[in-house]
Length: 136
Image 1 (cartoon, rainbow, N blue to C red):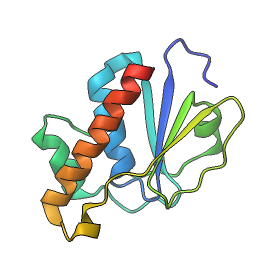
Image 2: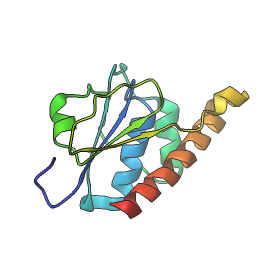
Image 3: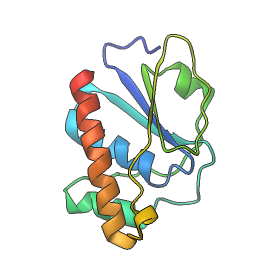
Image 4: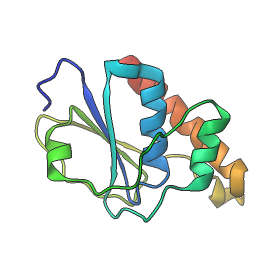
């Protein structure tokens, strides 16, 4: 658990290339310095998903100099809240740390791809991030 007065939220997905990066960027944009935000992956990819980054830019949000990185024990131990996005990533829960799993909309299951898919994902994640920010 973080000792800071500012809550620490860790967003996790498998690749840390899209969903968790998107959630982290949206929360940083929404909450500013009132929340410490980190994102990581259980099996990080080589680069950010370009369409994810582009979909954020469409709503005026940037990921900055972020890149996919591996989830560490220290990240989980230092978190107040760990949010696991999707069903693929597996994270062992730590007593005293709040864990949430967000099973996000997957437009590709309905035959929706490309930027349209990414915008729908972004909007689903943004609604969840806004709810989380209200609960912090």
